[in-house]
Image (cartoon, rainbow, N blue to C red; front, side, top):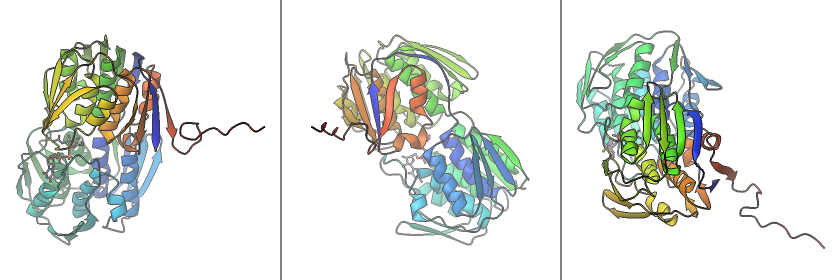
Length: 433
Ligand code: UD1
């Protein structure tokens, strides 16, 4: 258990770099299974979800080495196409290994993935897309068996632009005979990142960024070097942090166009924002106004992952900001915790009405999930007094050194591991005599 101890009320000032993208790294790590040579990835963020992907690759018989922000994967000696339950449940993105294993081995055996509890997260679209390509898949309880199958190109129509289903279909289609069309595909930047990686590895994939992808074959190339793009949600989180606390920060090495919807609402709320091609400078007086109606949607709409952190930034904004969550049914888990800090939020179905309060006060709260945890940390930075955020490891799944980054911008916070004797929960012994 990590315990974030935050003393709120500090303005954020300074410069920091955005981390490499979690949601781009994970499917690219799965795609390494297709590459006959070594893949060198740079700017890979140091995250628990990345460790989980490496554990899966090693279990399958790949060589995976890490040196700083670089990772080297050699999948030539793969020995298994089965992923045990305990590795699958560590994160949601483990499900992407299904398409990659089908492409590499023509078969796979795994179980349902883990990840944040955001409501129902079925994988029916993933399975339907893979079946369309000829995969013979049986589900038995929580187990998924993809029998040895010959994959054939097909036309896949996704009724919803699921990011994960698009990635699984892209990976499997690389090994299919003939051409595959994926219509209704997700348009997230992470799809473009995966397309870039697959092309570098020798796949003929086109269309990323539009709703139609065309995949026609794979002629594996030897060694491949790739750089992971910046993390748009981590960058948005820093922007929201500064918007809420007040101050002025520059976020370097990011792609502002990829989180322009978040910047738009921060601007509506009164922040001054200057974007250049790889950086954002944001200044905030701290006294924001409500940002209007914010509805989450598939890219290029407002990202569901940024909803909890923008909410934290707007807790003290004058007026009413209204969120509508359209992607996940249970994505307001941060709300009861934010209320403990004094937030005024009315929840009704998909809608959350945030009425700005004058002050937030420190309290002990729980990180409910990855982005919910970030939301609590941001709210703690805006609150008067001390906030303790108890986190069973969610934040470290997706944020690289968030505490170091916030401290370098002037935030006053520390992380303690529960059980270590910091006098937090363990009473100090009385002096003898
Ligand atoms: C989603 C986000 C993605 C984000 C990621 C991590 C969207 C569209 N996707 O991707 O931007 O980075 O979470 O938090 O915002 N669904 C099905 N059946 C399926 C797959 C999905 O019904 O087989 C539904 C889900 O229940 C959910 C929605 O589709 O309501 C989004 O799912 P999907 O895009 O697949 O989620 P992720 O890939 O996790």
